[in-house]
Image (cartoon, rainbow, N blue to C red; front, side, top):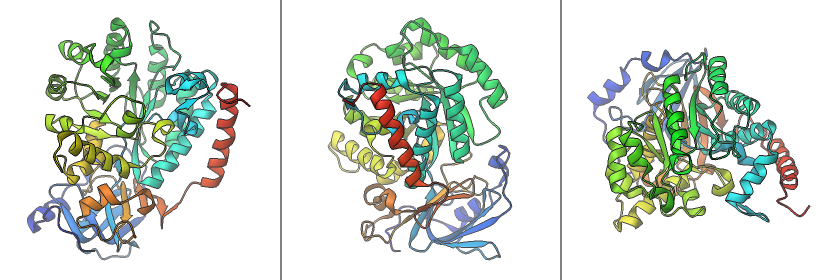
Amino acid sequence: MMFAPATSLSRRSFMGGVCATAALAATRGFAQQSNEVVLSGGHIVSMDPDIGDLERGDILIRDGAIAEIAPSISGGARRIDMAGRVVMPGFVDTHWHMWNTIARGLPRSRLGPFGKTMPALAKVWTPQASALSIRLAVAEAVNSGITTIHNWAHNTAGLEFAEAELEAMRASGLRGRFSHGYPQLLKLGDRMDFAALEDFQRRHFGGEGQGADMIELGLCTREPDRSQDAIWREEWEIARRLGIPVTTHIASDRKAAAMGSIRKMADSNLLGPDIQLMHATHASDEDLALVKKAGSPVSISPWTELEVGYGVPPAARLAASGVEMGLSVDNMVLAGNADMFSVMKLTADLAAGSAEKQAVLPDRKVLERAMISGARTLGLNDVTGSLKVGKRADIIAARADGINTRPAGTIDFMLTHAAQPANVDLVMVDGEIHKENSRLARIDGAALTAEADEMIAHFSEQAGLTDG
């Protein structure tokens, strides 16, 4: 493959990356594996400043971690030929309402738009529906190269819902965060059941936010824009007492932004690296300066923000503010699919269009948002988001020799503007293969979609969304 180089690689910086210790991420208690694998001969995009890009290189994976990165690695390990492919970190989705995935294509119904359709479904929803939705979401994630997921579970109608979603996430083998939420039908003045949350944390996470596996615990709350002041403040304070990171929607539309919630949060010391903000579509420049100062990360989901009518995502202003930013697909009801490639393309082009300046958010910066920056927003950057010795082997490979990817000029343009999920040839999470030779390795897609078809038809009828 011949691409114009996006980053240079000196021998000194490369050797520094190769010699890095493996101890950093290996202490997190992940399931160990005994096999070794070499991904051989691919164009490596490491997203690590010390390693950079290798036009041709090998990656040795041992016990689920990256053990070596070099131009050539010899040995008796299993070798997987990566010629003609770009080998890179898996994508990190930073905000995904996975519970309603089987309701894809129901942003509106005979009852009305999204805001009327989802509450009707929530009334009849079951833990089994949430679990099936997560299984379908995970299949889409793997197919498109997403290896880390943030499940924003804002229809946690009871303990059985939380346990069903967490069990489905753990069974998936993907990395991520389960953000325990609230019932969709919770009234404005009602409080979340924090006693149940604390019990859930104790039983499933050892009383901490970090589990013994690859899923961590978070809390998603009703945003200050749509909650009583005393309630959201209490939710923040309890979450911090329990050591659980908080995530919330904020300033999504003009009415919400006019309430000044970001200023209230800043004045009360209720921003910080443990508080992740979603959308911020209409946050002012002053708001973003407060967010940057406090270190709160922001996640945007450009497809759904446009679809639901929030407005144009402020990708250029967020980039200029220096706020740590991740990307997300948000939900399948509105977005339609879990295509991080199209999310990157839209992010780059919205930034250019709103700033009226081409490449105001360079392609490499957009890649960072989908990988290492996304990992930083979830506090997982010591584990995933880049390829570096000692990090866990969350790795994907995209074919660069497809009719839609060759020629492409630069590797960055290919990945952010040309590639599609169909080009994802290999997906590996924690050293385990989930997709190989462009085929899902652990999922029966036909059986899964048939089950989803049957279940959503049943719930749509129950909720009165159809005339059936």
